[in-house]
Length: 358
Image (tube, rainbow, N blue to C red):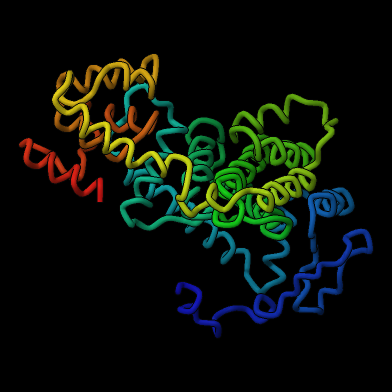
């Protein structure tokens, strides 16, 4: 529906006609007179790396020059990048009304963006709505705690992350319906890893290595791990992208975005537990049940919350599981959030259970 509403007359002609068959960067720079081909085309991590070496440019500079080719001025590119970051930053400030106890800033920023997304607010699809919290969180972390030049960091980060996103979009998928969560959260993490490494001054090889590591682990850790290495690695970014594509092909559809299995299948179990145990200890929950879900500090938080706010506790349990449940309980107890429905009478609980069972 969104794309149907786009005014095609406002889109540069080269964008409308751009071919997916990109040439080999080793053959030299393309003829700039062809509006359909950017001056620095790349279709894989290897070709992108070859361009950076051949023209002595960073990944961000290559993406920047390609944007110039499509008719944007320096001012327009800067304004668009700043606008993208402005929406991301607004999400963080809107979603983070109060500090969540015991959570670090990165997680806090990411959850804030996801809350804005869940409430129907304005976000940046980076690369999708479901994974929209990762890239803003890492960029916010860089601006607040790392960079001395925020404007430069924003441009370098987003341009570099965009290049990695292009590689995944071309070589595999960014759709959870096609590739599962690895295609959304994994790609976002990979993009953020590359952007973080670029802002830290890493060379193109290290940036792509960070992106390759990031498809499997957290973004900041991936960038730091890549920068601590000697640029000798066995798995390339292109190989990681291909592995993700093959995994998506082999994956059963019920484990993707269709909510036919996984935690989605446990929803009825939660409602049944509430119904069976509602007359037992802690207004409906046995401690053995809670211990089976979580442990350590998370369990202590839930236990304390359940004793002091039993009715709100039961509402949280209907809609949350595992550590998500612990975070929800923690946020409600400390006043950082309130469930959509606050139960004050047992009759309300019965209605909630009936809706859950339906």
